[in-house]
Image 1 (cartoon, one colour):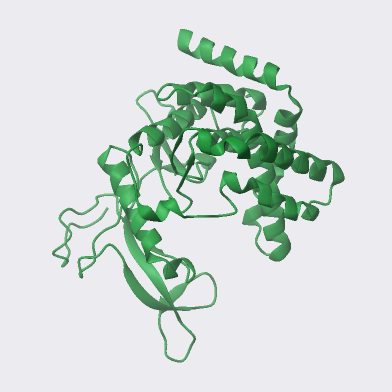
Image 2: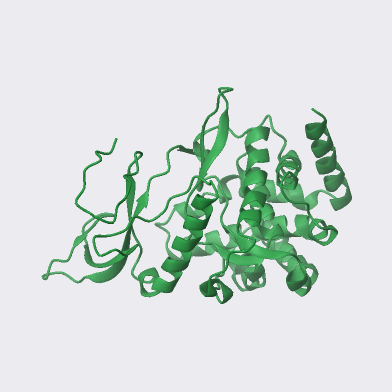
Length: 333
């Protein structure tokens, strides 16, 4: 609980769930325009009823401040000590979003359906949103950047896995890259995964998607890419009782509840899912090669290669028929 007592005249209402103090790294802190773009995006989603973090105004009536911080032993920061090197960091106080991360609960068809819904609801909500920063953002983690992955596949030592990743990248480059600009475009969260979605129990006692966090990868691109990411991440850790190849059917059904896929989007969907598997697994392996102490980047690899092989080897026509059947069954129930 947060006491409703403060000395900041620009705080009109105290967030009852508390706050998260977030300091960006020194590199990201050199691009305050991106921080402003992220803030505007969060406000837009909040105003439209999404449960998301949003910035609290400082005593200077800004949505962030720049603080000079010194790294201490371990993963902690503190205000500058003149005896130690320090760097400037953008610091924000974000409203806390209650809930458990999706990764902490068993995945169900309903949760996957609701993730698909979330992807299309975001697309609809941000249909008219624009910030000039998003016109020129670039990252190797954006799905449109998959062709770059080809230069890092050497890091995958298993020959079968490396060949599968190379084929997925090549197929995306040939089939998707030439038509990206012709696909429906819009704003993407950019990283709709099990770590960035929050759940809470509903009136039925079951877990439901309740919130959304971390907009650091948000960008403008082909809308179908968001759905591809949802399918890929949910396939990685789905429970044994839920067939991996069914995941796309539940996610697609949820997505279609708020936005229809065009034939051109459906045509490239499987290729995009496979490309994201290749991108995530290869770049994760490369990041670990660069910094072996960073185990976080290998999270997807635990089950990822098995899930990747499952969808890669499934004929597209049979896969789509399976997904459509799941959708029909869900809407009939």
